[in-house]
Length: 350
Ligand code: SAH
Image (tube, rainbow, N blue to C red; front, side, top):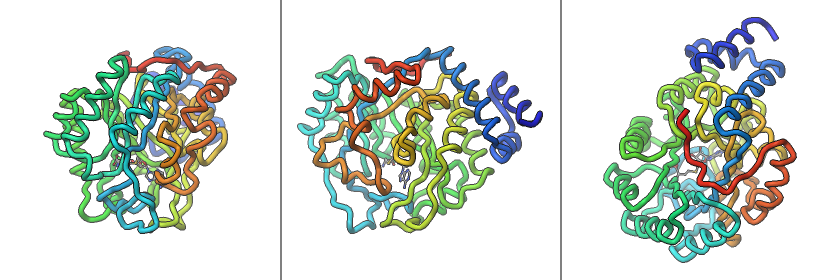
């Protein structure tokens, strides 16, 4: 590895920041050697704060009905071939019961922007989960809503909120989304969520169409400045019923590289090894953890709807991706020297 790369990695490990131009250099000069050094530093950093623990979240995909038409997403409104579903309160509570018995202490309710889930409906569900499982955290990931809505949900007991920023370059954002969506609206939501006291997660896709190293450096700078408690990043994967059907998928190696960079820039961030990583590579989750991730989010949706939440083609939901196989997941994680724990897995201040 050349001295420039080594110098950038040393600087990032020590100061947790690089300039935009330095992030671009680090990404463009990436080699297997620089990736290995970054990953080693990222593991040390993550172990200093979280030890060998890997937190698990039960992901319940509550609806694939969505009013948006994001160009990359398989459940976009314009996809006529998508079999739509939504879960009711009873389905969601029974998924939580099953997850609780399996050792999950965080439930993530994710879905499209489905008008059925008004504040009243969703608050009622959040309250019910919190009263049945007071020792569990509830994470919501249901897109853009008004500040008043976020406030009501927080009041009802929601602890965390995941809303990927998708790309920190407003021009790139506009190329991935329809006209009615805006980068400013996304940012408004993220700031509202933070001000309302949620643990907030932002994030982006790696290798999304038109993305450049400059864009990725902007994503890194955004995370560095916003200091979210969580960051969700995974490779872009095409879906046949979208405008981007014929675009190439993102790279597993680059995703892992960026996971390491994020760990070093923001040591205490909760960082999942995502389903998309596991979809592109059978060892994707392990690779993500070895790159500095410390969270996995197995699928806890009822089996009857699992295949229908198809954000991208071949999305994993069975086998070791399913919450029911957590025992097998535990063994795989143990085989690389880490330990799945039964814990809410809250953000730790450094
Ligand atoms: N409606 C919610 C949940 C969206 S789905 C919201 O707006 O937050 C969760 C994430 O899946 C998205 O934020 C996006 O980054 C990711 N995703 C969507 N389509 C994808 C694709 N084709 N490849 C990879 N990731 C994708």
